[in-house]
Amino acid sequence: MSVLSELDSIVLRKVSNPPLTTKNSELTFTEWDEQSIKVYDVIQSIVSGENVTAYDASTVYDMFDTDITKKFASYNSRIWKAIYVGSPSTFSGQTPEEGVYWTQVTLAELIPNIIELARFSDGLKSDTIPAQIYSKSITIPSADVLQLNSTPKTIVSGTSGKIIVLVSAIFRATYNSATYATNLGLLLRHSGSSTPISGNSNKLGFTSNTINQFTLRDVTNSDQFIDGADLEVSVDSGDPTTGDSDITIDVKYYELDV
Image 1 (tube, helix red, strand yellow):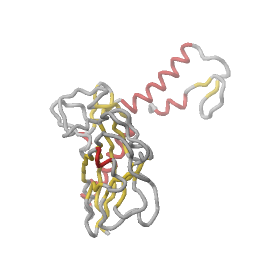
Image 2 (tube, helix red, strand yellow):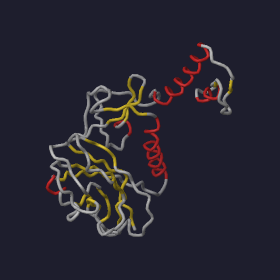
Image 3 (cartoon, helix red, strand yellow):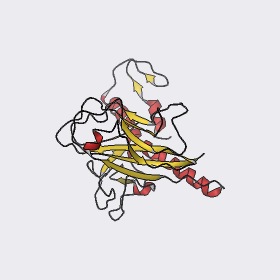
Image 4 (cartoon, helix red, strand yellow):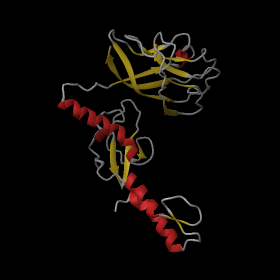
């Protein structure tokens, strides 16, 4: 019997929730402990790190690496993901623990990486060449952030005959002393497009050191992707009125032939 099937044998006291069994009375101490252990075992099977490459102090890890063995590691019966965003973002010899270099994750974090690895493997067996994933980072001084609506900044320059397809985008900043005000929404879009690929209405509203991810938008407007257009960042509505922190945006993308 798999550990997941153990969930179906959990016993409830009063509420009916098939296929679980309802006892219609209080659980004994032993029965309660048994239920708790079943839940623990299921969670442990998801986060244990079994079959994930073990942490190696000599390995150079990088949260942006396309090799999942350089991005994830198992240590102390847990799965760890590299999150260091220094310059450079590579590191080694940092034993996994919650903090600047690592964070605990579940197997769900690995699924997209495993899927991409499988697609790459299939590509090697066929005539189709898998898309090359590129990385780019841009730091924008605070003076330019204050003019980011009137003067957007190019992150990736476009190429005629290709569309830049955004895979992911990370926003990070070290807070200085003054908070940005009024127009706080950051948008990622193709130059000349009225439809953002990604954005957040309060991305510039940080009041301490921050790192977070942009959310990709599911929009079907015809001008969301433009042949040969640059990928740029701008501020929604108008320029911010105050603020003195530089910001950094890290993106991953590929180019689609059109």
